[in-house]
Length: 420
Image (cartoon, rainbow, N blue to C red; front, side, top):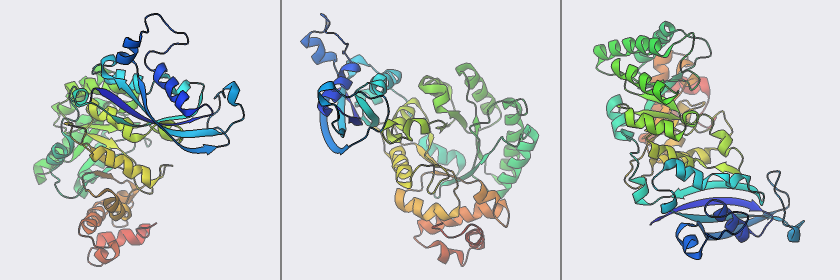
């Protein structure tokens, strides 16, 4: 395959086939007037082309404002269609930034559309092979965290309470003692007056290294180093110098080029946070689906990608969460899968449903209140999560498993049933 295949869901009052042709023209050779250099030979070689248009339904009202109806079709219903457009690799080369611009550039502003969403990508092997993809992925992350069967159980340190580096380290000490596998900075915590990045890393890693010396297990901490490229490189080196085993980046904020630059420099797994992704996908008729979005940042080099969690506190449906996680676990040619990160309102209760829907335990499972709010303390909270995943992997109901596992039993009593 020498062409890039992009799948879209469109909504238009125009003829869907004509609207799709406008898409292809806008993103390749099209202008509002015919140019002399636009020969049939060049169009054939460099032009995007419509591969398929399938109308799926009609609606009376537009989903988004600003769309224009063609004069000859005024007051006709809006049609939704699944559209496939292919782009020649010659016009993009191996550039991820070029790919984003081609398949998700000015399309969203085109007047004929009252809805347009990029839903998926199929890429030539030559393109994917030009990008490093994840350096550690699932096996490298599991080896560094020394967790081979159940998911990595973790939590998030929130910055809103204004913890100093010393106070953060004290909390990390509690979490390490509780038996966690993974701790990460919140996306809002990077470098602040009350908690400089360097001081926080030093204080936290002193605790983590001391715990590792005593127990043989080094807790993986994802330090949020998001910033300009030079700052991210410097901060990565601080983490590496102090024995850290993971760094975190806010992917949309630093962009594709930022993640690519970090990947080239990094000797540690990159934990990719998708803060801001909701503006790309929350509206069902606009933006970019997570499987498409994740393709870019997987190829850029992220090792872990956030996907929300079942029965989360946000607006994302469970179906969307699992679709996103499955996309992470699906190889892209020679680029290995990445580890999906489940979070947002998670506790022991969602473990069986998560495992049943995903069919894998290759994930990071983050809980806040499900750990810290356990009636018997954080250690019991961690234990309840591990026990819930043990039950899921052994196909035993949580209620049955809880009869011989007190931490899980207490969690079920405190937080409700698995279906809450």
